[in-house]
Image (cartoon, rainbow, N blue to C red; front, side, top):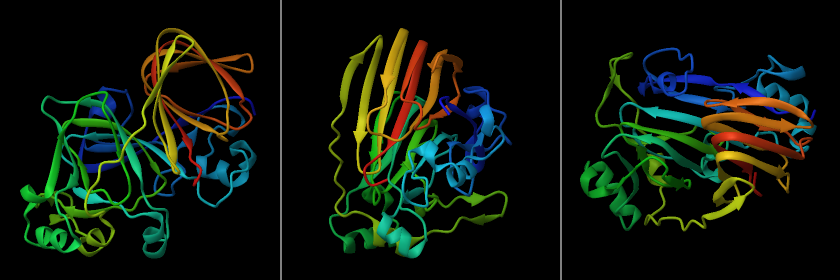
Length: 321
């Protein structure tokens, strides 16, 4: 099957969500508090649906289960990646994710290492990224005493920034920020602090996970050292942000013109169109590309050419995946 697999996302309502998934990308969102677009997802909490070709109407988890050859006969039971767009109309909770070992033992799913490409950010936006505790005992004391200003590390953020968030990193996406998130396919989140908010649907504060958070948080916090590589390919600027055991993530920027690719080692490639319009040509067939589309280039697609004026984020499974 030498064609892209275009996808219809699954949307998640969140108390911190807004309307920018509709106003920025034109999605038909379920409410004014839509926080997450699960754009390329096989996760059972929100699988994406194929919209073209012979598999039109099937969910991506069905295709993964029945047509593994389209994914290079990748081993394992779990499709390893999940691509989201998040709209933080209000700040997300301060949270941390477990690694594979802890998550498989306690949650029976993968851990969650992730990364963010910042699509948009209001003036003076920030992220919580890391903490100032030097020992587990100090971390536990600061959390239990509510010393959030002393504990939490805040970073200013702007559109075009990139942050890598390994498992064990305390973090929170700030108010007014929209990101494309590439992550392991996991829905496990441990809340450390939620600003004492009350969920209007339940009238209750959301649950916290203090013991689990202390268990899995990396202490002390160390910023990962990124080896960001930029290169010109055809008319495009290709930026590789990360190449890890979990995933590799790239930005493809095409101001105008064309760029051709040949598959290297990865069994498949996930692509999200963040801006512009153009086309992709595969095996002599052309498909239009517009802002807000998401697709997979499956294993049988060995070469492709993209034309137009486009900004895209692409990802591939890493060695561990």
